[in-house]
Image 1 (cartoon, rainbow, N blue to C red):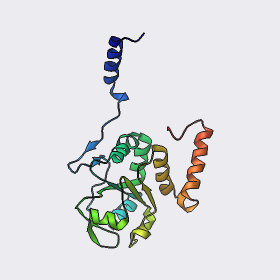
Image 2: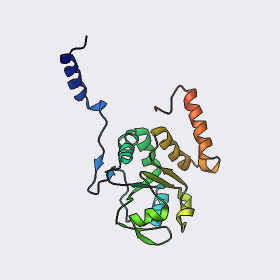
Image 3: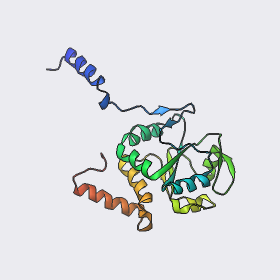
Image 4: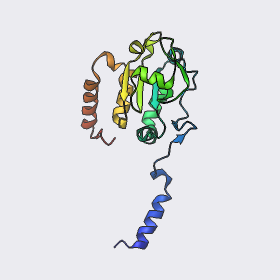
Length: 198
């Protein structure tokens, strides 16, 4: 029988196990969650894409905002998965932008805008929004020609990693994202893995 005393001891023991607790993401002075592998940038996006290509990577622009619960979820769930962060670090340079920020950003077409104005120009309406640019789009003069794929909002780990693979492995050349996701989902199921809880 579980008594109050046994319950209190169990709760205290669970609290002492750090590996079972979800890690809190670091938050910067701007209120955005930070990762040590984010790219320091002069926020000249054409140059950032060229640099990514020079590094054999692609470019990811991650739009977030202060006090965004889904941004926190992205950092505390998805970015706590080593499979995801290792894949990002191997395949993408990551630029973080603030949907309501005032830093100047040089867009692909050469227009200098504050982050909040660039978000409006790009049609970023909520956070997090992850925009992926394949390195072969280097030299594009507009967001329409530079952007390869967009992840609007928070996606669970399986879907988020699948989106990254869709671009980095150039699956977008062969099939739609829905078809790619269905195929990957079926492979997971064949191996007895539930993608919804992966």
